[in-house]
Length: 451
Ligand SMILES: *Cc1c(COP(=O)(O)O)cnc(C)c1O
Image 1: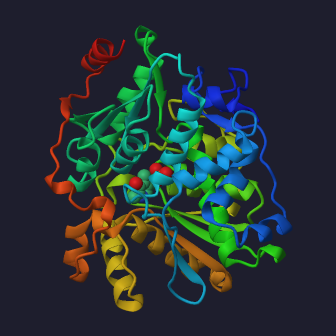
Image 2: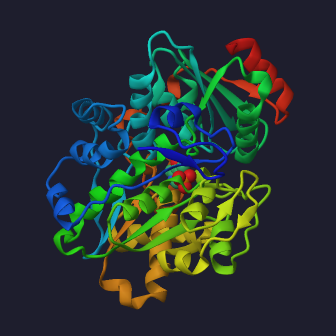
Image 3: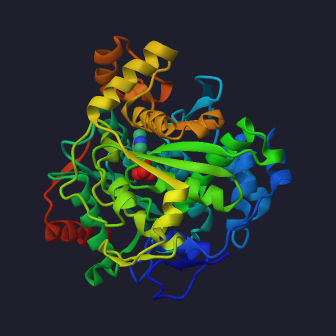
């Protein structure tokens, strides 16, 4: 399996190179050249398999050139050693809880698989790999945990000083070892801009930089698995019964997982992409005109405060257009096809809070702000598409409610039970260093410490 760049200015490459480079040399994003196709029989056969077994079946076509089949299954079993609950809310509506991993967000799914792939493919005598990661909250901790202790790899995490919760911060700053964290006096987009500049900087050629952000194809492929899993567990796969997914979205990596699942044969009738007040993508879907939001808006679903999602370039590419690395639409995708497949909706903070209350009052379901955006998006979709109300529908819950205790307590008056992975974190000592949004000091620090 080979991977091409969305800028199409470099030759397609194998998984190993795509993984270690992160971004292609032409600053495009890697995409698979082809997609394996799973027919009704194959999907049905996955219905009674475990999550790691489903993961290995779905990921095998992408990895088979570089990772042996038995080894892949072992890696999947090691990465996915936690539950993936599907909570029934009403007869046909469900919440897929992707919050049971070690850092209690869905990012564990991708980070843990990618870390294992990289650890597997890094030869012993190779130069040390430095993974630069900008985080809006959960990527940093998921990546830091996933790679913590992996030989030959060091992790540098940049987070926006005032936009992550204490628990989110502590999950990355209490690890130590091969993990170094920086608190940036700016927004997530500033962190991402610093990281992107470093990747393009010739002066840093002596350091072997790689990314673990959702610009890395290694992040996206594992995120297709839970859509297949939810589908084969809930729907009549033998008859290819269509399903509706609602995905709370920020950088749109999670959504790309669903798009890839559809490419592989999961009959997704509509993909609801629900954003917070950073509504650049719903607006783009409605108007065909794309405009970044700078600076991004601060909302309570903080991991989705993204004013220019990097994965949009991938979506545009799959629908026949071209968006370059600056976010300029060089060729329009088929808006008609995009609108047929996706339903974009922006949810305000007030609606998010109201949704958390109602989900609890009406159904006894505890949602946190990100999952609530997804759930609200699904309600809004059904309101305007009554014909879809008989479908199986799944809203994705991307973080554990215990990551947002103050919000949940003030809205529904209960303290969400703290999962084992988050308990005791308050008391652990933290280490992180300050950074400004200026590039030069950041570059000098990288050179001093990592070359
Ligand atoms: C990262 C994140 C999102 C957004 O996912 P994208 O792939 O960036 O769209 C949503 N919810 C939570 C809890 C997250 O950490």
